[in-house]
Length: 102
Image 1 (spheres, rainbow, N blue to C red):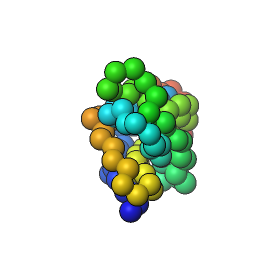
Image 2 (cartoon, rainbow, N blue to C red):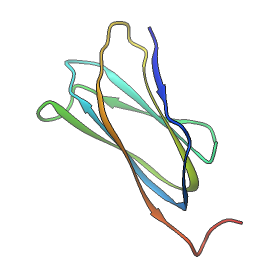
Image 3 (cartoon, helix red, strand yellow):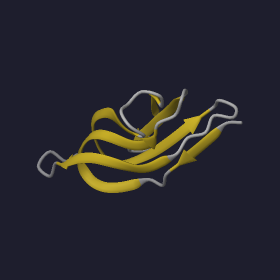
């Protein structure tokens, strides 16, 4: 069973998307695919190992380092019977007013 969650598109004003931070429950095995799309572009995907981390909570940081105005996030897992739990998502960005594309 493929599991996929996709956010709405967030418009935060022009700036630099620095990181996408996902807080998830540590699992005994498995990977989570974390994807993002900037300004309605193609999704870029990164793999997060759900079994690596201290304690029961993993803070997975995905580097974005890309300029834009909007971001959409997707989380997925394609392993049958693999459970996962997401506690929160943060988008770290820095607003950039002077160099905005017109």
